[in-house]
Amino acid sequence: MTQNQAHDAQVYDAVVVGGGLIGCAVALMLADGGMSVAVLERRESLCLEASGTNAGGLMSQVLRAETVPHGMRALELWKGKTAPFLFDLDYHRLGSLALARTEAEESILDERMRLRNEAGASFRMMSGAEARLIEPQLSKDIRAAVHCEADAHVNSLETGRVFTELLGRHCVAIKARHNVSMIEPGGAGFACICPRGVVRGRRLVLATNARLQPLLAQLGHSVEITPRYNQVLVTNRLPFHLGPMLTIATGNLSIKRSAAGTAIIGGGWQGHGDLEAGTSRIDAPSVLENLRLAVSVVPALGDQDLIRCWIGVDARTPDFRPLLGPVPNCPEAYVAGCVFSGYLPGLQLGRMLGDIILGREPDLAFPPSSAWTNPDTLSLKKNL
Ligand SMILES: Cc1cc2nc3c(=O)[nH]c(=O)nc-3n(C[C@H](O)[C@H](O)[C@H](O)COP(=O)(O)OP(=O)(O)OC[C@H]3O[C@@H](n4cnc5c(N)ncnc54)[C@H](O)[C@@H]3O)c2cc1C
Image 1: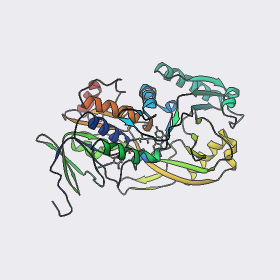
Image 2: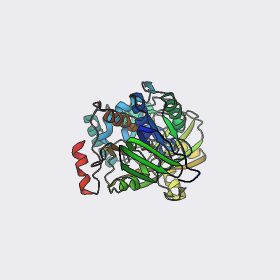
Image 3: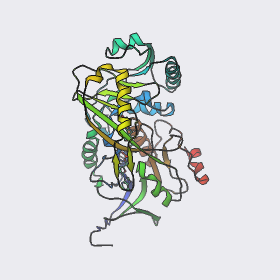
């Protein structure tokens, strides 16, 4: 151990590696359930990656059908009034409209709505004219829409501050600038090794999202994870109102009005990045395409200025399913990450993983987890 390393003599009941939304939610549940918990985060504070750079859209309309029930439960939690999730993140129930411009898009919407309503959503299909009564700024080219009244928006940029306070109140040890490079299972738990020192826990939760691969490999599991460099665009303050959040049938557009009155535009358009170097770069052509698409849906956006773009890194598995639950063949190790559009359902999924670790029955079944590439790990699917 070097002079810069500080050995933490305590053995925590649980060590959570990765202080994004899901890691924080699990840590909060465990601490609330009476465990001593440490969160190890490589960055200088919590939720600086996907969980603090996303667009704050709580849109059950864009979820995969299998995570709709979790998204619906999470919409309740995001109000910030259910213990231990007591916080204020500027929650606004704006509702959302998913839009169709062509006959083909209309049938995609119809099918998506059917599957999601079967999974517990309450979405309603309507004509373009009816959608324009809800949102008069919509283009005349919109021929149909699906409306969800329950969808909402929060100020995601404050996620880290809110969870730092919440975890602090629950006596969770938050260890920022702790980049875990190695995990040694053995003895009565796990040793998490970082340049700053070693932190030990009887249980281990891996919640490092885009950076799950190397840590899972150390536990003997090979997984394929692709980083996603999502771009977010922000306009000047709009001189008009935008009510519901908007998306389109193909899914590659989201538009919402922030509490500050700007339009936040996204939809998964990709920039460039290097996970090792921790760098990212805007892709100008895809910014333009994203803006063109936004203007085709809300023409008045064409008169506004683009004042800011940023990139956040997220991750996906080949089948877009999350990695979630106990790590096979590794008792007391758990994983949570690669959740598609995971800010909304992340709170509920974190709560459920917390319940599992505390030995409680979760209030919903887990959504199907991704098939890991190591055949030995396929048993995870059965476990869930
Ligand atoms: C730009 C963008 C826009 C998005 N918009 C939306 C949206 O509007 N609605 C929605 O529902 N979802 C959205 N998402 C997706 C959503 O933000 C993510 O799915 C979710 O936040 C993931 O949470 P997480 O906790 O799994 O991961 P993260 O927030 O990425 O957290 C992982 C944490 O682990 C830390 N870490 C990594 N490796 C190590 C290590 N070795 N040691 C210690 N710490 C480590 C990281 O620094 C990070 O803080 C968006 C994502 C992006 C990037």
